[in-house]
Length: 238
Length: 238
Image (cartoon, rainbow over all chains, first blue to last red; front, side, top):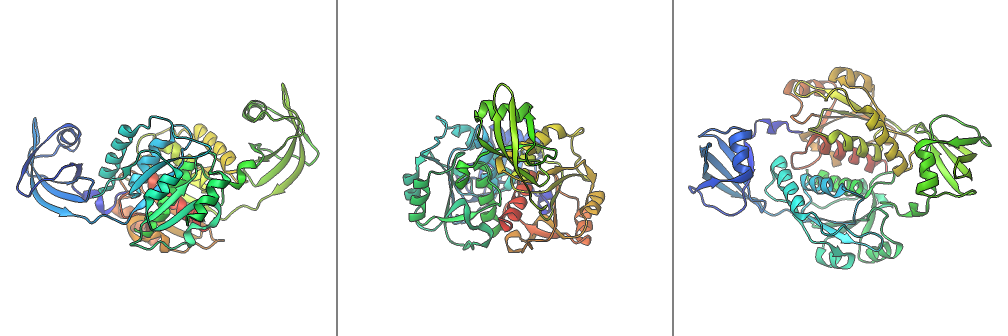
């Protein structure tokens, strides 16, 4: 849904740190993207992100056959307050687009949680998911990339979340729209797996300060609830 | 994300009207679902929706080899105020899950709009999409099913929307979270295609009363913006 961004320069993912004035030889996806997809030419400006807060303005020196760029400027974007999603396993192959969409919507951490009723398929396709977060970072032109965590038990995942607001996606909760989200407060959200959290799990989450919020009048699949919660958060930080 | 609904009876999609006391012979998906998936037995209660507001409570008379049910009760759920999404074409195969997720989130009408920059691939996979809306109706246990429209030009789509609130997904808008959605007001939302609405299209939509709302601090793909807008609406009607 680009608008003002239509004319924005190409956006690359370049991990690692580099200094103003430094020349870089690009390889792999980013080189292919510049030379073949956007057909960049010497003198073109492009932007890169390392996914950890550093945006660089680059000038293309050579675009084919080799791709060389020079660093014109480096800017650091402060880390945003955590938007951490603790998510039970959805059905089937829905994990892929769950990752893609959470990354686009600015969720900072995805923690797959193992629950009483459903476990994530092992091993997780973390390599594939990392590639999806990179593609989403390019798409959303973000300084920060979604961090994917190894699966944790529910208690470990909550312990790792640390202080902040705690939301539980639950059709019996108060409308998510009515709940304020402070701009500078970290927040953790829990979404049950395909067959839902068990009653003991829901009670325990409530004891841990997770407040039930309703995302829709109808029942949502796990990945849809996660997306709706991420959208709710994104709209407060838009 | 079921919770209280865990123990809910099976939910079927049965178009057509029927009277209390009537016996029905089920076929196809619904019969297979009852006899093989949930292995319903005589005496079991199931709920059905016709996707047009009528919910029926059914008792299983025979579940295999033939599947017969009797209508115990019929209830009509009033049509909700329209949540109509005018959506430009997303990239690739993303239309499928766009339909699935909009249906889950309670959007009432999806209108694929042809835009200056992007057209929907012809022919649309409307048969496949209708099946996805049925699956989402079962999942969300809804009385009303998402209506899929034939693609329209932007002007025709806006004309067909009729009166009500008008939202435009636009990163330059005011945060969607801050915009109130009246519970009983129909609303139409416009989301640009993969490369965005053109400047003239955006200007024309503004003249037509579409108010720009921002859904995220980052750029969203078409289908993600549509989902975020639908989630925003759903949270107000949760």
